[in-house]
Amino acid sequence: MPTTLVLPQLHGSFKMRRIINLTTGETEELPDLPVTPLTKAEAQKKVNNESKVYLAETGWYVERLNDPSSKKAIPQKILNARAAARAAHKDID
Image (cartoon, rainbow, N blue to C red; front, side, top):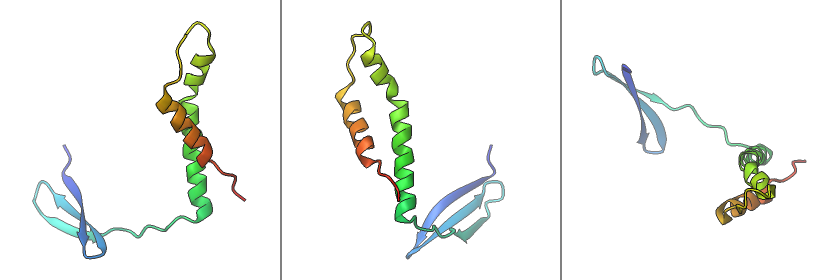
C-alpha cells in the first residue's frame, strides 16, 4: 500500500504538487518543474513518431483485407484514422 499521495494543485498561475504522507497525515507543497515547450521540429517529430506507431499497430487490418479468405473489410473509423495519421506525417528539414 502506498504511503504517500501526490495531488496536483493550482495556485494562481503556478502549478504545485501537494504530497500527503498517508501514515502521518503531514502535507508538503512543492512547485512543479517547468515544462520546456517543444520546438516546431520537435513537435513534428513527435507527431511523426505517433503516426508511425499507429500505422504499425493497425497494419494488420490491411493484411486481413488482402487475405481473400478473411472476407472482412477495414472499418471506416480505422480507414479515416489511418488517413489522418498519414496526412499528419511530414518530413522534417
